[in-house]
Image (cartoon, rainbow, N blue to C red; front, side, top):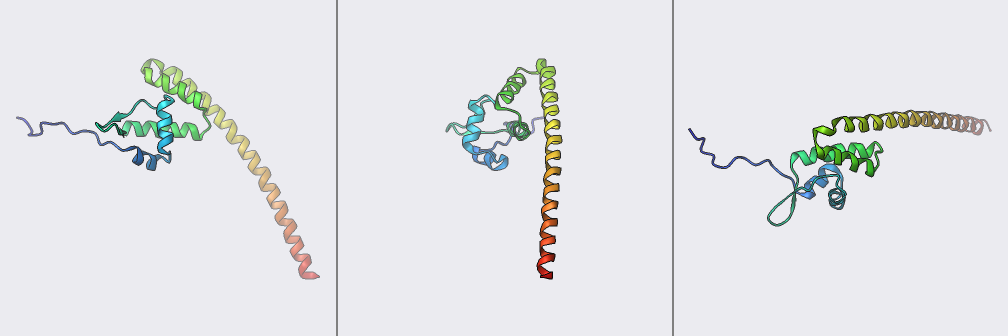
Length: 139
């Protein structure tokens, strides 16, 4: 028996403005990501307006993580090209992500060392200011 629904439900889509609000990327950046091959061409309405599906949004969020962790645009483009090919490139994508993770781990260690050096300098200056305040009170 038919369920009375002659048209299957369509996946909800988002406008470029809605995606910009959710990702923090500007509409211009989203268009650039598409031109640069970072995201596949997104669906369009009959009025030629971009409409992003949930899968587009999930992929954009992953790209933003790659960018925020310092992956270059060219490496992101290469990764996107491999992804577009499909499962045959899983090993290559895994290798890229492992290398990126190693680089990120090195940068984290470096940032921690630098933060410690800054903390030490801040503490020293705070001690100097405390000493100056004590001498000002005594004078």
